Image (cartoon, rainbow, N blue to C red; front, side, top):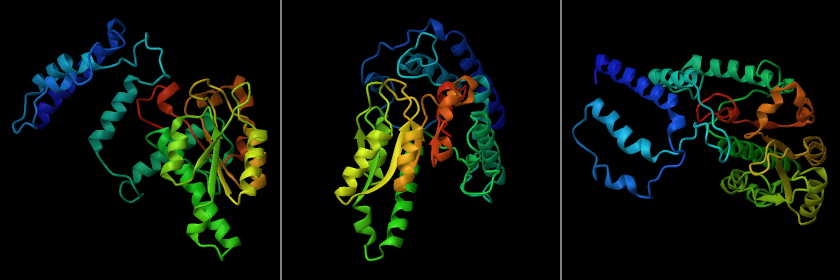
Amino acid sequence: MDAQTFREFGKAAVDFIADYMENIRDCDVLPSVTPGYLLELLPKELQEKPEQWQDILKDINKFIKPGITHWQSPNFHAFYPTGCSYPSIVGDMLASGFSVIGFNWLCSPACTELEVVVMDWLAKFFKLPAHFLHATKGPGGGIIQGSASEAVLVAVMAAREQAVRRVKAAQPQLSEGEIRARLIGYSSDQSNSCIEKAGVLATVPIRLLPADDTQVMGGAQLAKAVEEDLAKGLIPTVCIATMGATGTCAYDDITTLATVCARHKIWLHVDAAYAGAALALDEFAHLRQGLEHVDSLNYNLHKSLAINFDCTA
């Protein structure tokens, strides 16, 4: 494909997307296809010769679109919202067009520096404590992840390594293997399933504590569990609180959880993937209580904000 054909295909694709978005309310939210439908409609092998882009767009309209669940439809009310906007779509196009890798500053300086700037914008937008900013002295500062699952996993792994180093320094006679085998984490039984999965991947079992009658996990439940595990010789390592539980949108009691975590040197992470956007609103200022004691926090920009999936801060 040469540059001129790319321009033609790109313009046609933009028109296709715009037409889809303008008429999405007329689509049935759920497709009427059955599992395996696409296997009978597409070639069985990777084709050796290219197709014309016009034919590809026709196939998308004929075969792919009928099998889509239309998350952007105003008639879609399942699970949780997912963001989308024309500016975000264009942003994805530009990022794909540059096609650079930004795993360190030198690989593409603008990638790292733009991420730093935008993450500080977001921290200020959500009115987070100053220690979450890159611009302040200390270990603070955010990075962009693909999903809340990735963000929670990174937090659990960071907590794990911090705990291993701390215990090893205090008890050098213990091997790293002995320390790692005793690590334990905590979260609410109302938390997202990604939290328990993060524990599996990080080899830190996550103990799910029963929420109270209002579906909230607080310091009382955590303190009881920690004392039980200390008596068993385990090492409390990380607590993942929730701001907007998947099933109930409940907010855990960050303040009382932070008190227990500080007492036992437990890393406190807040999974605000679902409803963290409320932090930006003055009428929900009370939800920020305790965040000054939190070690890390994640929020899905692709939920309540107009950012395309997937983008987690």
